[in-house]
Length: 187
Image 1 (spheres, one colour):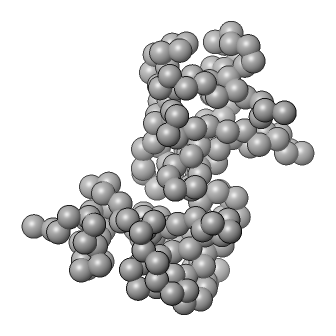
Image 2 (cartoon, helix red, strand yellow):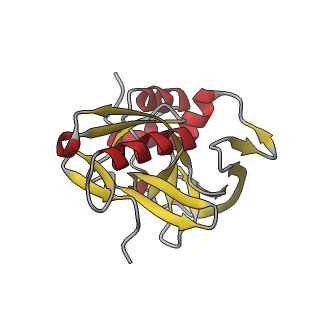
């Protein structure tokens, strides 16, 4: 039997992978190891993970690395274990929401997202949706955890924009788990 998640320092990589698969994430917020350098890894805007310029082709590895990803107070990103902390470059957001499931209508709506890592996130007060205006149009983001966000893929964004326009709210926006997210950022 595996130790509880708060004792991950004693787990092997295989055991951590099993816990991640069961969605018990490591307590990366409580780990404060010394900084060891650069991971030579990058997460592209489309959610592809790279190591030394080559894409990481194994989904299980990406999923494992995503479980030890943390956002730092300075806005940077690191891969962190109880013993080391390595910088990782993130072009936009570390995750991409690739699918949405819409349950209910109006104020009773629940929006559930599947991320490119396979994780599921339900939008609501703890996982808000925000919209950032840019020259190429709005960029919608979903809060995943600990300052980490998912960029909503274009097809997902178009589906949500249609939902927001059809629900008749003023200003146009989205409901999920009793929280309202206007399509336009507050002035």
